[in-house]
Length: 148
Image (cartoon, rainbow, N blue to C red; front, side, top):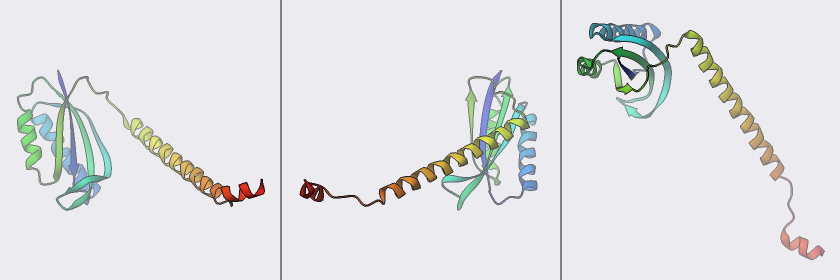
């Protein structure tokens, strides 16, 4: 068995119903080409490293699938490139079988993001504390020498 991971970026302006249609279309093509979908995740809207077709943001979707051979992989790649709804895509061969994840793992991702935002708040608070501490008047070296 060969395992693949395909990450594709969709226009960020699409509503959830349109995004679901795109995911269903990709899933149907996966089964049509003889592949078996393992996971299909929507990572959400994220800022792009550079503009793609005048878009600063994109909706990222991750797909894991397995196949017996790679005969139809070129056809799948061609299908993904020809889709006007998909801005970019990348498919790579995985070394190991990806773990099948449930909806519970998505909530754990949200918890991780919440922890990161809490860490940011704590670090911002500590940096403002340092700024407050440095606002105290500091005697210059010349004044210290005069006192001695």
